Image 1 (cartoon, rainbow, N blue to C red):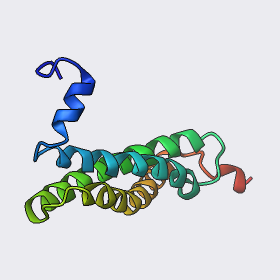
Image 2: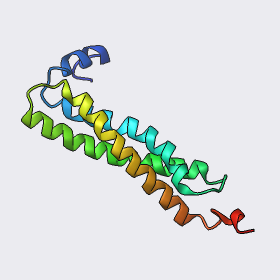
Image 3: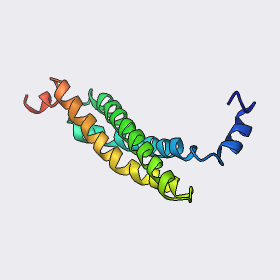
Length: 124
């Protein structure tokens, strides 16, 4: 951004750069995946009320990491194969759904394994 002077000018000029599609795909893959992972994590994590925030945070973290990596890989493949850059946003969003589901499940399971009180009220 410092090379262009301001953010608006930088965004206008970076749209035409050939490498700009790769980080945009990572962004479009990670943000919706984070939301979906944060919603799925508590559903998989268990029944403890105290662990809802923990499950949600872990699910969102896993989903964000998976969505960013998958989005960057898809962006790199798309820029090498397809000349049309408009598909990048749609492919990034398409990658975010499985990344969010898998990340949410992983975060919920990790939180369930790490919380000894999770589900204890069911056994009382």
